[in-house]
Image (spheres, rainbow, N blue to C red):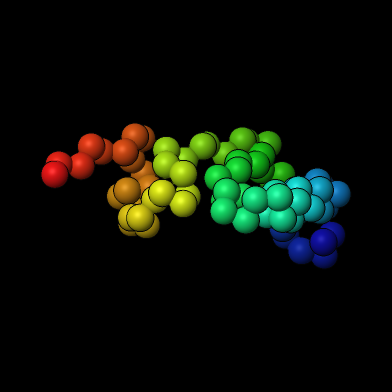
Length: 74
């Protein structure tokens, strides 16, 4: 990686994060997408999504960026 202009990252942390993702996926295939992780580049924790992945039926950008789900009118 020294021969690129890519920022320095801790590859051990990347490997640990990937291994944790694999463990989470094996433990619960339906809910592993709800997990959040911390960026190895910025150390910023990911925000928790407002709706569980399994319950989210709208994958539009606008819906994703909502802070809380809108109440649907019946």
